[in-house]
Length: 253
Ligand code: PGA
Image (cartoon, rainbow, N blue to C red; front, side, top):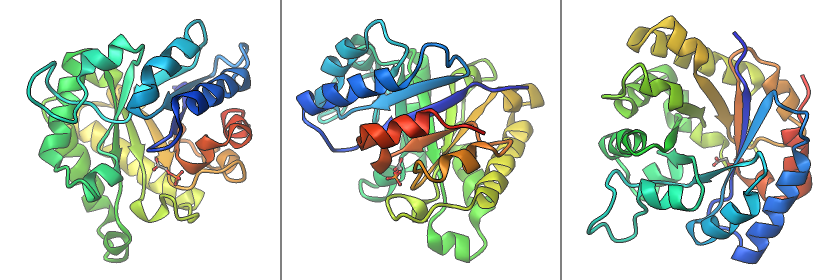
């Protein structure tokens, strides 16, 4: 089963509207029309979503929010509704990023609400999971991943799984320059796919795209993408540089 690769850029809390549009144009140019074996997704800060959405019109580059609320409207100061993302042209939302979990104390339950709410309102979740260094050293990596997958996907149906993407991002590799080795990443991805087989079935697991995130760079993307269970990348720092991200988009295996 061949899964279409997905390269996603998480711009985090960076870039003005103008800078975001300039970078979006560079991303459009970096994805050649004949490359239909891969998709590219960018997640600008909320302030730039609408303008970047306009920039991406009639391009193949997809737009994502960096988070999403489970409700469509109401008293949720600081939150963004799925319909608001769609209004800007977004199709996806990153959910459960470790920065949300660690700095803003988003719980598994809240992350699950975001996942099910996004699906209900037609936004595709990119559910992030990953162990801390402490958890890896205590040999708890698989237990943590299994718990995060189970909690994050509670109530998600077989059919809805078609719209879900999982991103494995070891917390110790994010923004640190320390990438998981391709073997470490492959082991984690294969394990996550096994968990999906247990929770759903083989066909669901075979279709599921699992991205690797954590210090993905032009120098390690090819090796990572050569692994059978690595279907793409969620890129932070290197996605802010047009040249680096272009090289990552154009990975070869
Ligand atoms: P990084 O971030 O590529 O800068 O490590 C990845 C992420 O947080 O998604």
